[in-house]
Length: 229
Ligand SMILES: [Zn+2]
Image (cartoon, rainbow, N blue to C red; front, side):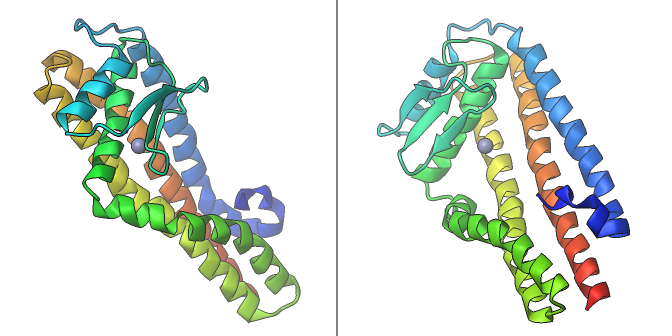
């Protein structure tokens, strides 16, 4: 959102270039890794849907339903509805099983009231509100030469940055749970587990890239706000 204004932001915009390059790399990495491992069939009898159900049952969870979503790479767990949505539920590829196990990891976090997940869920509305309000406040403050508005914009943007940072432990932990649970339930073998880890690592990179982008955007706003004040 912020980088729609490169000309206006001038040299401050340069701060974002490493983050933009990293984000592009992370996008390429997850797409290529997923595509490669989507062609790799698991030797076990599990589809992604069956794997997710098995992991949920093994964790003592019986109130989460598994559904399908037709958007590619849009797999997610919805904590409000207790629904796990998979983009390739009937696939038994390593990529599909790995992602399904990761989403089951989120459902397990939810069932166990894992702290960072609760915190992330709690700050979603604040972060959404903050990210929508931040730039208008900041820009109006700059144009009107009214520092309190500039500061308010920066504070609002900080909520969005905090969200991307809290997301990191939540995502890493879900993948860690996924790998442990897949091994314990013997859904994939050890060499397949290595491939699952590659997919989940690539997915985690996109969250690191998003956090880096948000943090550097904040640095850019701070530098811009400081200079024009
Ligand atoms: Zn996740």
